[in-house]
Image 1: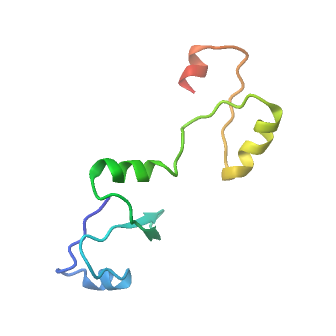
Image 2: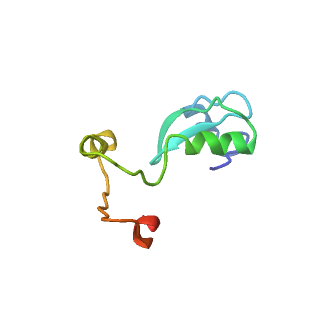
Length: 92
């Protein structure tokens, strides 16, 4: 998250991204503009919105069909195969 003061030396940046009112929230991904933010304006709402597209850090796949479908959704996946419940599986 970054704060930009459009009244100072970065006016051209604000113009580039069509900032006309305040506060204006913009979402950037990998340094590129992604979308305007139109969600809640309190901290908890912003955090919830930013975490939503990320999803869980791991997901248990319980069938061959789920395994075959999973990597195609995001393009990249790390898969761990565990024979039973272990500390390593829990950490994964």
